[in-house]
Length: 301
Image 1 (cartoon, one colour):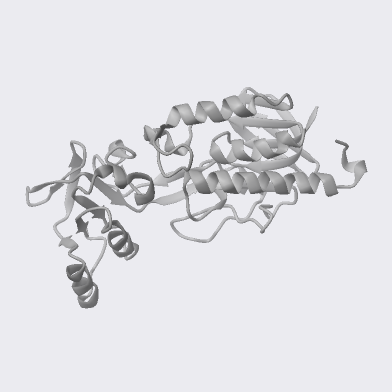
Image 2 (cartoon, one colour):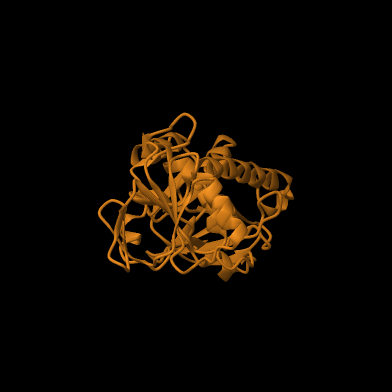
């Protein structure tokens, strides 16, 4: 059997794309490894209609809703190889099965690359965050820290000032010029230049001089890259950004490989559940357009 579309990745973007195609009564295969990017957080925030909802419950309810459609096939596993061209893509999963599809959608999400500070990764999603819109409100205007990775951390500190009193930890990753230092002072953002040794407790920072600074939460920027190498292996172009890699797409969400599409965090520079849902919905509709417009000899509904 050749599916109309094979979607690699069954998180928010992948399921949102699938929903559009399923409602068009298309045959859709979703391959999902069960490791969504936001699995480290308990709650989904800043999602209209589901704000504060248990993350796992939201995922389960989304899947339950798309499973009502009879043209869905869901495979729990990992895609390990992708080959083929428009109207004849072949995806191999980790159980050695091969699936054929006319269109292909990468919705694999991204992996985060955090600053190399002891204890930071273990608190990712619980005491350490990157998105204030998703996590800062729940910190109840407490003391907040920004762990710097470079000049972009100045903007992160400015932004967070609406959610609590901010301390900018330069951690030898940021040199602050006189103008920026004055701006931080005017905004009442504290600057701590003593290097960080580790993060302990919920969000306590230990410095090289022995001091311990307790915060309600720590924010930092992180590098991102597609969670799967398959898009690159197929020949899809990736962005040239040094710290934020994503699959390059057209306005219709098609990659540089004809018939292969990408959506969600995989194909966006800015990330959130809401953006992933919207991007997935648009990608699904655009794939459906391409199927309808294809010559009948390439396949029939």
